[in-house]
Length: 107
Image 1 (cartoon, one colour):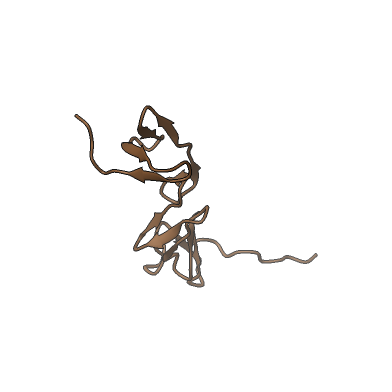
Image 2 (image 1 turned 135 degrees about the horizontal axis):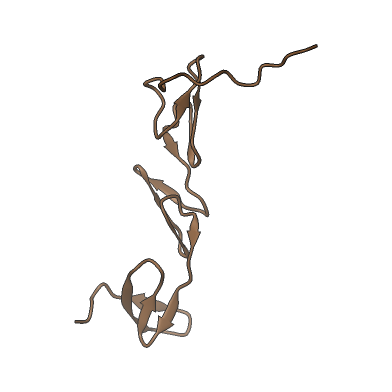
């Protein structure tokens, strides 16, 4: 009978080198949680075209969430941009294909 060794048993406490919730094996290797990569789980993994900005993800239009994992829909209603991020912004139509966003809010 052959016995194959797939992974070592995790250590009781992660080695000090594992970051972002990664856990270590007895051989010092880190097993990283979802959305983290690297030898010590040091690099965040942004989804849907997001880019790393320091220690957070900068999401592309149409995506939100810690790792840009959540899609959302932008609606234009009565001169306002409404989306599921909790923000409402005033916009002015310049041409049929361009929209200017203002950072001013109406009270």
